[in-house]
Image (tube, rainbow, N blue to C red; front, side):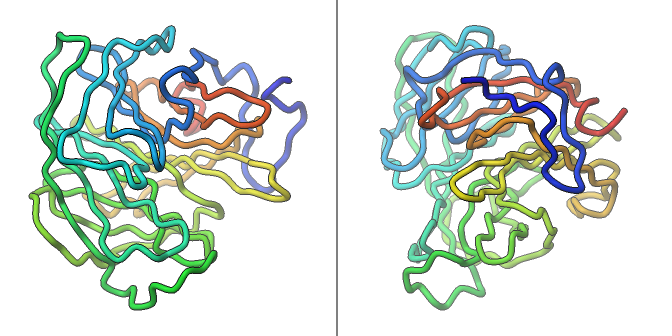
Length: 289
């Protein structure tokens, strides 16, 4: 079954052409429910599985999808890992999935970048715990604004982008990178017109790009999109230009990662009619250059 749908129009947004999206590899063997990815300094990628998977990261070749090594995370549990980000010293794993709005204590695991080498390595995790300042109701429900599947590292903070099931927007919450316990508040809101499932940012001097990936869903059909933001001021991510493209495919998009400034990788979870996979698109296709 083809993942690409001819003459697809999802509304007011520009739809990418099939030739603008390159399928790189299947990830089903190790990452059937791949939820987050990052690039490493040596041009490989690291990914993790969604809720209920083992507390592991998998490094893999982006051209073939073949596993390079397994990274065991000590003192951690995969309750609902949803995204991953990094800075020069640490990797941050977001255990903050909150589908039904019942979780009262959320966390981000912080680990040191593992050295290149062994096919299997163990690293110890530290915990950054947090709660949302405005969440006082923890009754089970479907539509709420306290789920999160996206995080970036920017400057000296982490920034969470929520998956708002109630209003189809995303809220931005800043979080310290230092292990401890915090209460985080909403600093910005943007109408993504869909559910955000991953984020990444590229910064090099004056050039800054933030991309959010996600999907709309109707009658069990996924309709994925990517928002890209440029020319914003500091951490005021929505103060500059914003452009959305829809992807001409029906997949549950999850992770996203820049490959320098020219390309973006994205992934989808395994579905009934499609395998977990890694895709590539040029950033110029996302921002209309």
